[in-house]
Amino acid sequence: MEDKMASLERLNLIGQMAAGIGHEIRNPMTTVRGFLQMYRNKDSFIKYKETFNLMIDELDRANSIITEFLSLAKNKPVNLTLKNINRIVQKILPLIQADATNNEMVVEVELTEVIDLLLDEEEIIQLVLNLVRNGFEAMTAGKRLKIKTFLDGNQVVLAVEDQGSGIKPEILDKLGTPFFTTKENGTGLGLSVCYGIAERNNATINIETGPSGTTIFVRFDDFAGML
Image 1 (cartoon, helix red, strand yellow):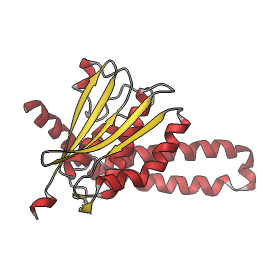
Image 2 (tube, one colour; image 1 turned 180 degrees about the horizontal axis):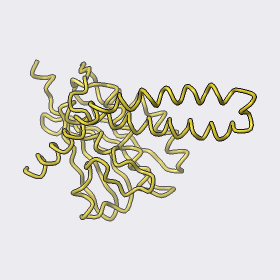
Image 3 (tube, one colour; image 1 turned 90 degrees about the vertical axis):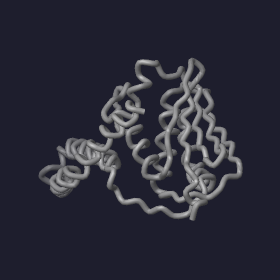
């Protein structure tokens, strides 16, 4: 419990930093991007067009990292309305299937009837996509990823199960720590964002892992049923 509280404190500190500086960084970046777009289309700079495109792409990549960074903010406003996790999964399933096809993998979906919950739909979409894409990155072509929902007591559970090689014990305790990553081009923000989304949507994240794969469980408390 002490480790969990310390992790949440670190996450909240990063969130406060994000809220404080994220927008201030974005403003000058937007100005620079605008000038690059303008000069890129001038005849006198036509031979540098590819260079301008590269600079704009890099600014966009930096902006996407800042977007993830801002998602860590504890005081980020949420729009909680009654939603069903199954319908959210079904809504983005075509996108998930397309990602699976591109990665030569298979997706299985096992949705059981669950109660509606107070959720921010856009945040839950981001949560599911982050977990699914992490699962894809952990696997090789031909492997299978399963998305499940079920009831466990008074909790609705979303589970994402991959067939990767599992997570090493020395890494497991660090998962969710902002900027910690084992990926060559990772930012170390993806799972941190997931933990932040879970907290804002009255959920907790648990991980089970072994040599045959990893399952991430997102457990939602039924606060809607108390209304």
